[in-house]
Image (cartoon, rainbow, N blue to C red; front, side, top):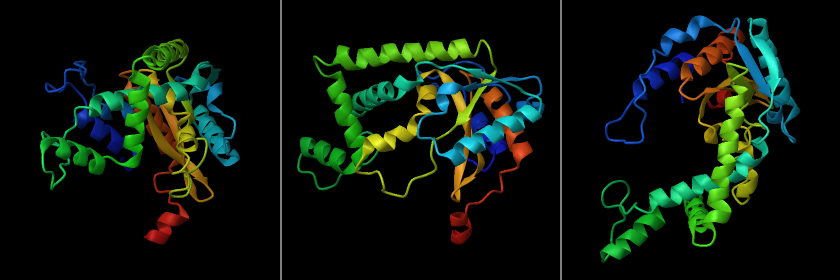
Length: 275
């Protein structure tokens, strides 16, 4: 979303904080994110979840992540292995919870009050149908159908309720880890980007690329991804995870790595060719 960590801090500073039009937004005071960037990582405790080195991770990705961890250690951080034992069930839990929430929220989308509105409808019902057919892409429709199924009578307890219980276990994993360390390190994805459209017909294979980032999505924590090298000419991301509402910590670690590694100007051959 931004060119470097400092820009990310500026963006977050602008959008963070309570929104009076959103009853779910936090009223916690917003810290000065820019002021925390240059504190460095000396004396910080950084954890490496052993579960984040997943089967099928590309060797070049694993090497780049290990190099990034060593670089942060050279900057004065202490590195220790930690465990997030329920990471392996985060992916199936997420792909029940997220589609269920998408189904519930988008059920009220009608194209009348906001967003896309189809033209040429003869009546209100037809307008609803046409708007949802034309305004939603294939992936959104897939998630709505999955979520509607998971929330339907007879399946709610078996799917959605169980997934929420798994989410609680994942939240507890992060709580225990952050009793020992200040932040967590891992890859953003186990592989580099796959060719455009390569997995469109296999959504499960596509979802598996989320396996390392999904636990943070469920765990009430925050994170940032920063470039840490190239593999086959494609970028690799280092993921930094911090406790909930400690974005300043995630930014601090990411900035320290960025400054030490100086990958900000890194360009893949594809980007150079496009330029």
